[in-house]
Image 1 (cartoon, helix red, strand yellow):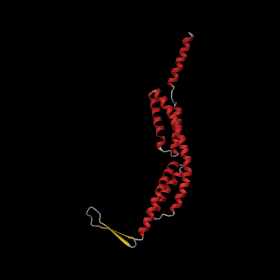
Image 2 (tube, rainbow, N blue to C red):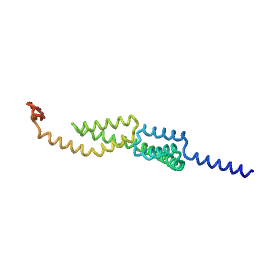
Image 3 (tube, helix red, strand yellow):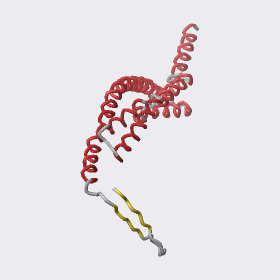
Image 4 (tube, rainbow, N blue to C red):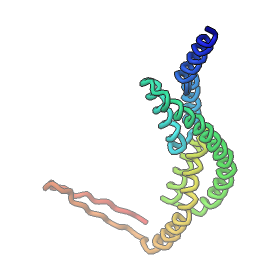
Length: 192
């Protein structure tokens, strides 16, 4: 009789542990909130893609009652969310000094630009500053890196513009006839 009770208790314990494998709804909600926090702080989709895939698979397995997949993907989800948060924290900490040093370098080199090159640099700097104000440091770092790598081309274009502006002195007339058979012309006069 005691053996039957022991087997019944053991069997019920095993069946409960098999059924309850994986993540609870509370844990899933907590992971979703962690993902939302990282998204709000500007984490790139490439960092969160694996986490979102495992989260979707966990929800689908929970809905269908597939405990094997639920347990396997639940474990992977916990591992990947921890790795993503650690990577995001490390990248964000590294982005702050990079942004400060690169932006100071760009602002000092920006003094050499005029015209369209200056306008382009100012518009990209405004984007970087707005991302920094939102505390989205990783996208700001990426755009800052692109501007920094593009700066030699801007300086080359500025040099070419300065060289050509001396040759374009005077008035230039542009006459355009619109398509469609209209009896009109558009005349523009450019003065350099």
